[in-house]
Image (cartoon, rainbow, N blue to C red; front, side, top):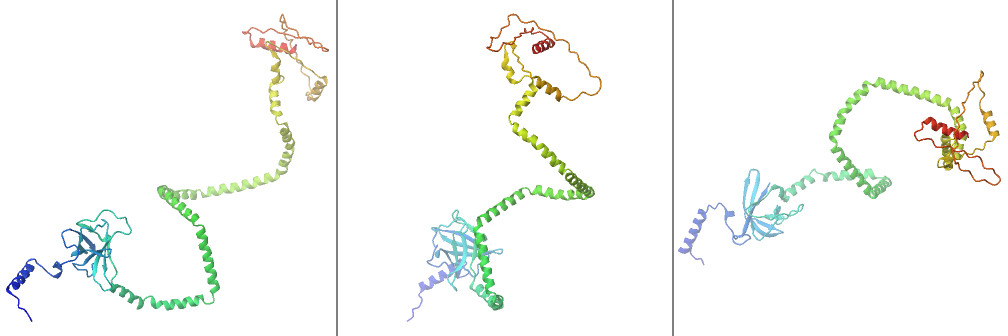
Length: 397
């Protein structure tokens, strides 16, 4: 049984059609569907740039973690870039550097826009109204048609047809060489094990190489100057090649002469060293006595112990002379040269008056006390000659 459309129904349909025409509706995508996500006023809109939107259409879903949170509101072309405006529920919070990707619900399902947090970066900020997700953070999954196209290229004249040839060639290469291949594998395993054991040294060497590269990079200007100056230095060496050759030849001749001299004087040099050995041995045996002997040589005949004999303004002097020693000293002197012997006359030294009140030494049993001679101290203003006369007079007495 059918019912005829009443006047009220026809009037409502006419008004709806007129309103639809007045709103400029150009297709079913512009009609707001009932239900769905982000249909109220609590939404914010985001524009996403894509290189290719494939067959994405308005009113497609916008999902976060496979949950529908909005819809595609509009798609338009800006130059060679497709721009898609998304309508997202205000309760959905995404970072400001979120990424967008075109996906399919199934193998042959509809397209939708997936929004996610960045994987290779730290989420920052918050996605808000009128934000733009650029091409650097958008993409799409491969289409089924593209997968089948690539598979057809692989199967028809691609690499699969060459697998049989590769397998046959490998069989021919390995046949009869199993032991060699096993040895190679063992050696490779040993080599890799050695690399693994020395990985710290390898890392340290790489770090050192890195530091060297950094040093060279820091001094690249100096290196460039040096490289620019090297040709000039080489040119100078080339210009002086003749002089350098003569110098080297002269050095060669000098080496020959030096070798001949060393060989000729080798025996004499060895004999001199052997003769010097006893002297060095005696010097080594002298040890600490040698410095004292040298000290006595410069202070003779007054050794350091003579200071102990000075008492105030006078000093005692006692000398034991052995005539045999004097005769030996005279015999050791060289003979005088032929000719008249020169004579020397020594004037008599002036005698000094004996100071009155000169102290006397106490007698020693069994040994008569030697006479003690005293001299007065001259005036402080006396001359150097007077002082010398005083000293020499005391020595003679």
